[in-house]
Length: 236
Length: 320
Image 1 (tube, each protein chain N blue to C red):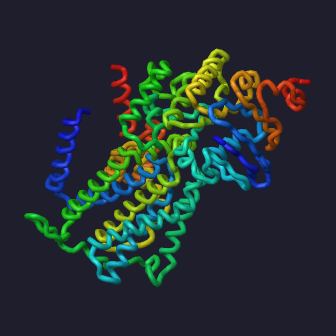
Image 2: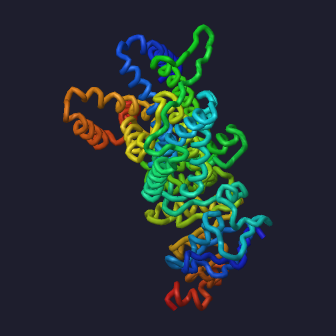
């Protein structure tokens, strides 16, 4: 299995943020992670990318165990994360941000520049604003830059924490298109999303967390048939 | 600035610094230059920790003191010359900073500031109370001068302040070279990324703790070397020279010059070593005016003198 989470529990002092969560993610799909605020979605992402150590359970990625490893090692194994809230180096230019995205790579400058130029071709707006400080970009442009910067690490799995947060509907559509295209190019993507319609439109597989527990796992088609999702998301 | 102009201006600056003692007649001003050199080392090494890596440290004077005491004790008890003791002073301060950093560099912002300030106070208390070793507030007198060294064509005896001036000049230039190489390398990129946003830095694969520790240990190590030089220059040390107000003094120098720039802390250190002297003509108002000048500068030029010049330069460059 590409990514496997086994009986994962994470506590913040007395609060159980994740309770015995298990899930499997096959390669090459888009996974949507849904749930209310505080359900444990970001906590799960942080555990996968090494920002948090689990109390119990394990995380396996491409047959290697990764729980408890540091974020830089997990990134080198192929998991990159787009943090919530378009986090960039705001005083650095678009190009500098992209270059920093390749920090974990050990191949030569030439390969990194080639990949950066390919990304600039793929995202023309970044090429246009290449020398602009990233803090001066619009919200949508910043999100595209945040995505492009994580691609510079050449990940196999991309974790995106609320990529549509705070963006205008038209921009959200653009971001969704970008996510689809990235997936078509072979990248496995996990997305945390509050917008259920957007998540169902994008995803091949959906997981729902509630109060730290995994309460639903299925396809977008099975989403409307499930008793829990009908009650909570569809008002049934 | 084009590389040729940059090289030429650097070359001229070095010539000027070499000739400077010949232009000064009063021995006291040479002493001020030596002190400006020591503070330049302290402010620039603190700049690596705070300015470039974003880790607030209020205990720089403690590492300055640790270097001074290690060096002085080795010279007084074992008869080791300065040329050996300053290595121990620098490395000793760096090792203590590393161990302390492992404990506290997980903290951020004001928590880190308070903890480092308390560490500084603790070091002063130890120096004050471990009287068997440090002689407490009485201090350590009789620290020897650096032993004479024979350089091609000239023998430095360290009998006059001018010779100390040349020695501190070499120390400052060597430290500046090392710090320049660090901040213009991939290590420096990682440190700046941590300063800008630690969580993003981690997300792009930077082991933030490793680089924070590196900056803290290297910066504090240089403070230790400065302390070692101070001990063998003043020839007497006591805990009063390495207290929290001294850490704040170094911090102010760094901010005054421009903490996120390479030369800013040196400019700040030189300016603020000489400014109180120039204000002597104002008599009793001297310290009040000094405080006022600092407050006004920090309010109106928060990025410091060199930082403000750079911003002005870049805004003109972007307009043209």
